[in-house]
Length: 157
Image 1 (spheres, rainbow, N blue to C red):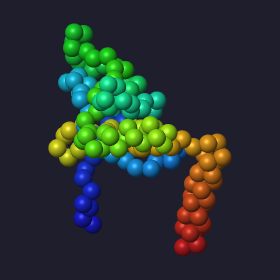
Image 2: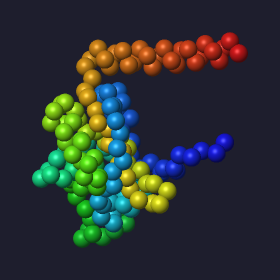
Image 3: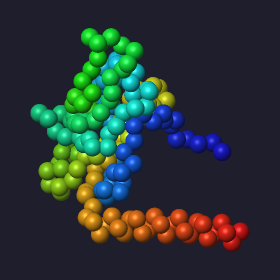
Image 4: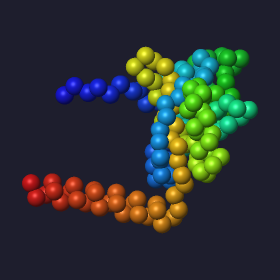
């Protein structure tokens, strides 16, 4: 069972994103962090549930993400837990994302923050369109049906 997918150590996940949005495309972006933010992320206490990516002066930033202070560092070394963090993407990807936001009314939603196999912190960003209430109900029905179907198949043998 050789798996070619790179190994990821999850630091934070936005599991609600697929429920609230139609994810059209995903992009991997680097993230600029301070030393205490990296240490805190490795602890796995970060939250990106209420965060989004946005354009600030022609650059892409992760806004409203929460990375708690690192407890073992001194007070003068601490970072602001809710500060905007710059995302590192290629120029062509940045233009494509900004065009999708401006023209098609899309949103940039962070799906997860993880460490790749080289130990670098990465953010998976989804280019998404918001779901309406009826769409969310349909998603829930489909998920319940898949769960029931799997249960029935297991019961039959």
